[in-house]
Amino acid sequence: DIGIAMGITGTEVSKEAADIILTDDNFSSIVAAVEEGRHVFENIKKVILYTLPTNGGQTLLILGAILLAPFILIFNPHQGVSLPIAPVQILWINLLDAVALALPLIKEPKETGLLDRPPRNPHERITDSPFFKKVGIVSLVMALAGFSMYYLTTIICAGDPEVLAKAQTTAFTTVMLVHICYLFTARSITESAFRFSPFSNKWVLIGAALTLGLQFTIIYAPPFIGVNPFRTAPLPAECWIAMILVSLPIFFIIEFEKFLTKRLENRNRRIMFKA
Image (cartoon, rainbow, N blue to C red):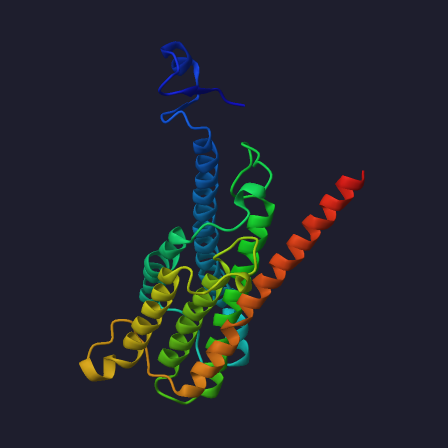
């Protein structure tokens, strides 16, 4: 509940007491402001909801490797234990994630039906229960994808002098691919990604293309330039096929989660309406 005063015809007393002043004395400005406010809030929530799981996935990946280290040594004492992703690779992921992938979500256009939604509780937190549920799902899937590709590569490339570099490169690249797949479904918190055009936000496509281009560069350029700061190794085409197949499920898992959440909300509304 707020007080509104007219900016042109309103008295100074009413302006002092009001919470909002309409500078153009046009009530339609209230509707436009509410819609814009909801749009900004949604996009901020999308960025946070995208960024947190990507960090959570890396954390689970590293913690999982540390916890499983004793078992790896027991079953294969000659392999040794190392992190699935090198520290410099983690920094690279966070850099691209924050700049090339997360920022484009700020430019996401308004979703249809913003004004048809019920008013949001002013005391409602951004980090509610569904928020943490989605963060947990994405983090777990991301960690499992990177973890599986890392250990699969160590098994396939056993005996190769570059086995560690190749294994870390596959885990590193798989995490980046999961980020990109998640980005396309993170464009909407509630609506399916199939309901809007992939070209409605060109910045998402540019960010994904830039990320892939830079990832290819740091993987395949070192042998030609003689410098390998990211400790990567060139990967054959079969590795890319496997990494893509492992990365794609996150998109469909989150789409299915949206479908179930929306169906449950609609059922609850029908029950409340009948009551």
